[in-house]
Amino acid sequence: MLITLLYPLLHTEKYLAKGFTYAVMAFLLLGAIVGWRRLWQQLDRQTQTFLGLLLIWYIYLLLGGYGFSLAYPEADRRFYVASEILLKFLLPFLLLPFLYRCRVFNLEWFKGVVFLAALTATLVLAYDWGTGLPRGQRLAAGPIMYGNLAMLSGVLAALLALYDKRLVVRLALGVVALGSMAASFYSGTRGGWILLLSLPLLYGWTLKAQVDRRYVLAGGVGIILVFVATYLLDTPVKKRLDQAVYEVSRLISDEQYRQGSIGERVAMWEVAGSAFQSAPLTGIGLGNFYAYKKQMIEAGEAPANIMRYKHEHSLYMTLLGSTGLIGVLLFVGVFALLWSRFKKAALAGRSPTSKLLGQMGLIVLLAYLDFGLSESYLFTHRGAAAFFFLITVLLFLISRTEAKPSPALTGSSS
Image 1 (spheres, rainbow, N blue to C red):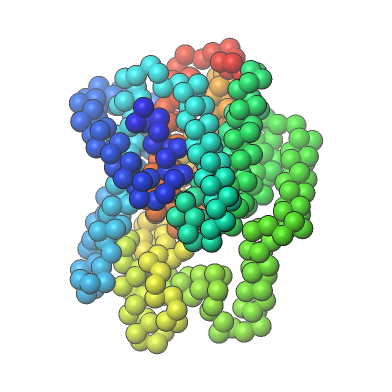
Image 2 (image 1 turned 90 degrees about the horizontal axis):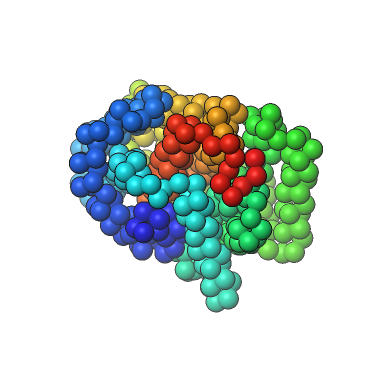
């Protein structure tokens, strides 16, 4: 039950989400210590390689963050926050022993997890919309973190609905999928929109052998129509897009403009670029952006209005500025390995279930690459916990399915 609720509760208030995550990880710790004795040989080689590379990446980030933090005043150090976030990188090591020991963890269980997650996002939307609270004071208490996750859960629920034969299950998943996507739109975060717009590219390019191109084209047109409709109806999407257009125009007309959501991001990315130039091989260490930025502001080399921000607001600038070329290579290695594993399952899986799971894995990776354009989402509490939970479960389910391939999806169409 604890494992089942972990992902859905990440869609709730941030302190509840964080606290529950640690409760689950503490619960898993003892079982992981006992279970890893025999587990390693049950894993396929790609999963073993992923875990090995992930551990190297984790150690590199931890040591780099701590080592470089010693160069800054103690009051400005945020390594403890970074190390707390990095604990989520260990979730696969804690979760896998339980997944392999319990037979209850299968595709039907995962459908339930995704359903609960999308339902939670839908209920949060109903509360926020009903109360009419301002964006920063809503129940989710973090519209970007919540909005991104809500869109991902909605997309996963929609895909599961499309593949399921049972009418009641299909309707239930479809309803919460729409509600979860609507929650993402209402949150006003850009990451969810970008994911939705990039899905036709994933299916039209990487997964073109799995889907009729007419469906891809129809889906792309449908998504565009949804955006047009939400814009014309004066929704939060329209307000955010109008704001973005205004800020981009100001950036173009005034090179010194560093105000607003986009302008401040550009200023933070410039600081991250300076950090990369100062230490291109290793970066300044994860968690040290705030201290480095403060020094630049005090020296008059960065605008004072970005002082309150603790991170770079871009996964890619975080990787460059805080982890350097070594960190970038480790990130690329981990993601490339996962992409290869999920793509192989999606295109050449030994069963329809494997192909479905592979598609979901690619969607999760694509989502985080999209979210990273304007947010350091992988290096946040909820972002990291959700990513490593989903990746671990999908790797496990693919391994189990391909070990004993089934002729058709359980309760699903092939």
